[in-house]
Length: 377
Image (cartoon, rainbow, N blue to C red):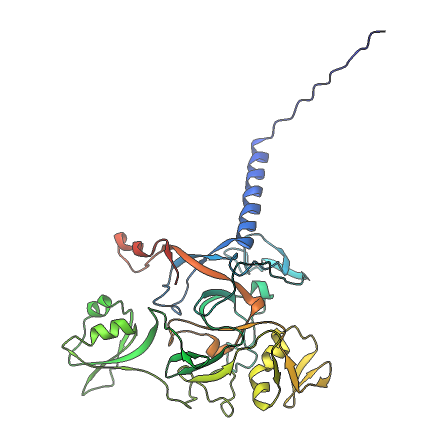
């Protein structure tokens, strides 16, 4: 008996133009989201806290691979947004579901001198409008960029503006800025300051018998300006030791009379390190223990630290912490004013600048060509 074979021809329906466009957009969004989460993310420098190492409107890439990417904590979020939907004040996320956050393996760890992007942790001790914390979940808190000057376990001290780590003077960033007073025997043309890349300067108009300018500048520029015949003297503007007119972390001037130029010595918390909770250590570390170290039932009350309702006399830290400072040492809101950065707030390492725009430049000089594709050091 002959066998009869039936052949069924299936014709694949061609996608419409709208469907093809939607598939392309969906693929691009998914790919961009994965790249942004696991590999590289683009950032813009909005303030002058890292000048002159990084300039306002430097556009840079931050590597998530160096320190290891974090798994998302906030999973209900509009792709490619941070805190709000573009051009609105509408939150771009929901915190109804919050997952534990883990860090994938990286190929290095945060080191002294690294330029790091992190989520601003906030400071419960800070007694001004900048106190408290971002209202956002950890992975959506405001991004800051600073230089890590001390890692977990380091003993940090700042003496007359110079950072010391474990008793040794740290290398200063090549383009680190500080405030100086320049005394001259004449008015100084703005073009002179521009020549030395001094963009922040102000004349003290209260002086009638001398001409004084207050500037933020690098030490190299100041050394060059000293050679000018109309410059009579240059003095760094440093706060004296014990001067607490500009309060600093941990905001206890009796126990810690710190300021921006004279700070410490303090020990940066390290995972597994145990400290005895005397009066000074409670004042220094209570924010870490009650807020950042994952203790759900920890609080500070009547001069004591309580965990699960019981007073504790010693404490072992659960994660590493870091101390961050801006290279614009007298123009940076950093760890000197809000304390330690927890390891779980670390976002990534700033690696290179891909674009830089000078908003005040002329048409032909809007782009800072010399900064394009430069490595961040």
